Length: 389
Ligand SMILES: *Cc1c(COP(=O)(O)O)cnc(C)c1O
Image (cartoon, rainbow, N blue to C red; front, side):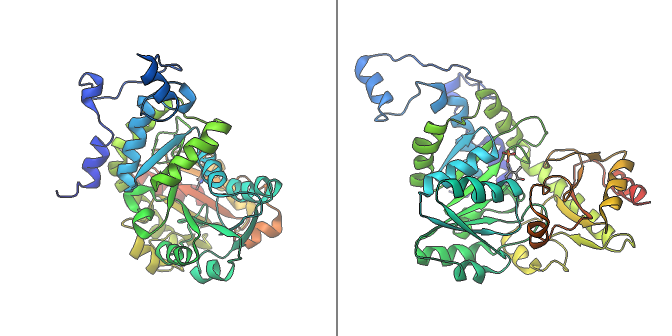
């Protein structure tokens, strides 16, 4: 059978019309309890010997539809939906790791993941070495006898740094280490890490998958033994399950993912090229630019370069002035929604890091993160131009 195109899969993945009276939209099952029909069947479902539903924390048909859709879009065997990106990250980490284990992770990435590994991981006896993830060899060099997990975030938040996923996964495979990729920035429309050799992909579905800045959710996708270990371990015991109403919203978002990402890609690329020559801009970080340090790797492993840019306007004051002048674009944290969002990174999301850690992560005082939305590109460009003064 011919492999379905991403666009078609995005519209139809996860469908089970027969089970839902032909409904085109999967129904929302708010039920927290499901009754059993007979003793043997009930006992089998409850004891995981037969598929079925019995308690809200452990899943429902709406959640299953989202999980099937995401497994399809990422090309994974199975998926697990959770209440937030951090619920997905912590469930993935705690299902793979135990006290005494070691992790290798980027020194520049989403700061809450950095702090999770450093402080929460640290509390449970898990040690992390933070490395320059643009250099695949840095992962190999950091391996210890107790290394169990390589963490990749590519493109990374906020500097859109690129890690060679195939290369790092190959190093991990030889050493028997699990590779987990945070694919939030790229989405499966632009990049499919499992096909490049990674074991698990995680998403903050709060961002592009939901796509409308109206929910928080997270997803783990990948090898079914690893996904089921996360489901029967951390997801079950720490909770963090996704609400059925939210699972439905994420699933609705994924149906238009291809259309939205196409526009995010083209708008971000246009804005990046325009800002490159602006006299008040010190640096533009975008994987689609030939000036990006790992542009060649990005070209190889991504089919589009995404909607996220880093822009350095020199000083914290210049960054504050710019966000105060925005009219079309919005000064807000988060990313991946239909609207263009601009945020001074060092003053906000990365303020929890020490100045030394920020410097190591490459987060300068004047760095702005721009999540380029799907408004008309001329309106976005004019607004940023006017705000630069
Ligand atoms: C937002 C984000 C997260 C965390 O997701 P939440 O849904 O906020 O918990 C993780 N990784 C990246 C790259 C993010 O941008």
